[in-house]
Length: 274
Image 1 (spheres, helix red, strand yellow):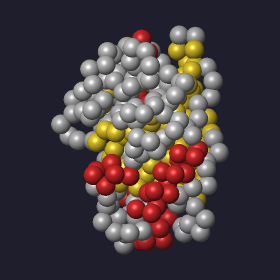
Image 2 (cartoon, helix red, strand yellow):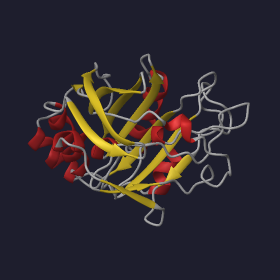
Image 3 (cartoon, rainbow, N blue to C red):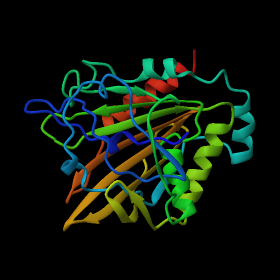
Image 4 (cartoon, rainbow, N blue to C red):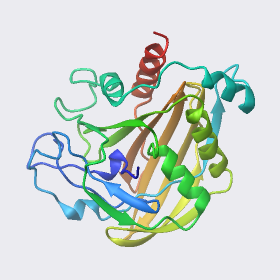
């Protein structure tokens, strides 16, 4: 299941809040397809502004955090194999943020898209470095049995933020996170092809938050047309769920609100205790 990352989908409107629209910006692809959303945002009829998508996404190296008391990889795998049933897309959607819960974003502008196999797709080749491709795949919830994406149109900022909640079976979440973490040990730069053509991204480490069972943080620098697109990613494993939070900015650092990350992680943790 090849998908897009929420921040790839920049939205605009004619004045006022940045309501969800149907712009799908270039993004990094595995050998496979890119999926466009079919939720209320994709049906809203907002005019797409292709020029806003001229900067292409990239992915970086990272720091890593093991949750306090986290056992080694073998022990964690055995522990997860005994986990409760995997969450469904309906479960994940219920755990996303709802209107009134995100004061940093415009009311009615935090659209949620549920992944399905009927959405339109476009094919791009994998990026140049296989380890970097692992990072991209896991951070987008590739191959997860259930996944939902949410976009946050921030007040006072034309650049949106995004999150992905991906639920796995048994030990699959830990194994996927290990692939992500291992890829980040060697991935430093890569090249790929997107909607606007070829791109090259550089990779830089960030300090991960002390959240969840495991966490990594990485960022992107992707120069294009005299500007530099900066993307921040924070990826947290909470039990059998991998949550990715991303922010984008141009010519200056990007940052997803840490308070929202903590709130989402707490919500995911509590949901798996019931």
